[in-house]
Amino acid sequence: MRLYYLGPEGTHSHEASALAAQQLILASAELCPLPTFSDVLAACFASPPGEAFACVPIENSIQGSVWQVWDEVMRACSIAPSQASPAWGILAAVTQPIHQFAIYQEGTDPLQVTTVLSHPQALAQCAQTLKVRYPNAVPSTVSSTAEAVRQVAMQSDKSAVAIGSRRAAAVYGLAYDEAPLEDHQGNVTRFAVIGPREVSLPKPTALEWTDETASLCLRGVPHRPGGLVGALQAFAAANLNLTRLESRPVGDQLGHYVYYLDVSVAGLCDEGQLSLQHVVEELATHGTEVISLGVYPVYRNPG
Image (cartoon, rainbow, N blue to C red; front, side, top):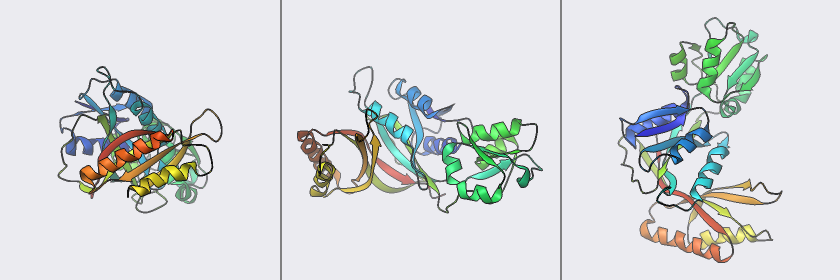
């Protein structure tokens, strides 16, 4: 059993994957780091059913949705399942506290730092604090927080700082500031476990259940006055609560969008599933395609 994540060792995805393996998959699962989200998802989707999963971030409380992940999951879920390719989807989600730390070689002078390295999401989460702590530094993006730490560890001078986790600092033997860098307290990221929908994950023992969510993508919403409102009213009429709604450009021309939304289905049981199916069928009569990205439990890591 393999669990793919954005590496190298020491990323926040690594920490979330270790937790997911322990609580939701198998403690003995092999954690497999890959350099990009595309690589992580491609490796998962190319694996025989039940032999591999992916753990990827899908939303951050400061920077919002991780669109590369959502778009690639949507494309995979829009492919009709077959014997060679099962139906993929989100099986569970875990909300994980995220703390970003300034990591550097011992003896680094903050006023002499000219470059701050990290993943774009981490840099954005710490943008205001960085201006205060490292006023002479320019942000520079790399593929992951742990890769940023690795690069700082390899440098011959002390002109660079990385943003990453304490685990990454320990892996590469670097110092770090005890005070977190993120601009807002309560910074959390929601990670999704992705795999074949036929797989049923066990209930965790150390995570708190918070919701049951259906993630959907709407394609072909009529491009006319009231087109989107009409689609949303179908959910309201079925007494389904939308907890997220975001648009993404289709890419063929300006003004054409797909819509991602989350529906809370906690406590609705079979009746809620029937209501959701009724909405899907009703929207189809108006030319709107509904792609299910998964119906799954959402947990919170209280640690």
